Image 1 (cartoon, rainbow, N blue to C red):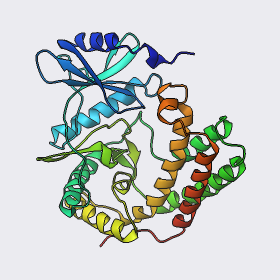
Image 2: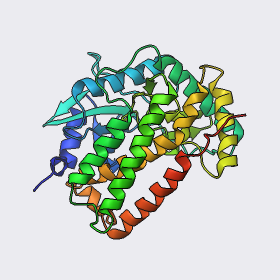
Image 3: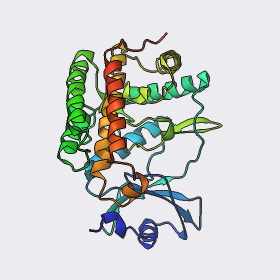
Length: 325
């Protein structure tokens, strides 16, 4: 069976960009993306563009346009995100031969140095501004970050899939069910206020230049708790993460309040991400790029490791949450 992306040829990509009014020079550079196909396209009359071809069937047009509108809203407030380009009619979402796509200016940068407290405060200030803007409204067409969507739905998909190794199937499913019941309760107890988030704010989605950080890839923006955009920037042992969190929040609180009750959601969110990641790989296995990139997925060693990691998460879920200084 063929996959829709099998038909996304270099010629199709160049034609799509040319149809938007840009003169291309034939240069294409695929960028690191699995969920969508993202390509740098060279131009004859200016700097390269970034073309994002959306995975067919994942988002509705309305959901994609909410992503674009949020990015444009933030950029209009001089918050350093990379918004899509608009054509003369104000359109940001285009279609060519069955593929929906958007164009972005190329904005390079390097990985952020998260060991520098000043950098963490700088990032925190911009996240505070993003979240302050995020409270102005909520997404209507995009998924919310909930245990049901990221956890239970993912587990139900895995249970029906052929990927769970028989030797660990029962232990994995039972463990995940216990974890998700615990997480359901923690979400209910947290009393968080959902707001519009970046949604996938890990260090790879922050690029650094001499002017500071800018945020890329809003493809997973959604409604959810503010802590979702903070916890993936923390690493190391408990003491190190506490110090990092304190620096982030020092900057963050200059522009937006932070409800410390949400700190209890850090390990639940990490656990949801682990379960969701396995289901994501299973859901995308018909895309030839996934077996090539993740050949270890589904074997016995993978699931044994997942059980061990989730058992560690079970212990962490029962511990007191981090506290900022």
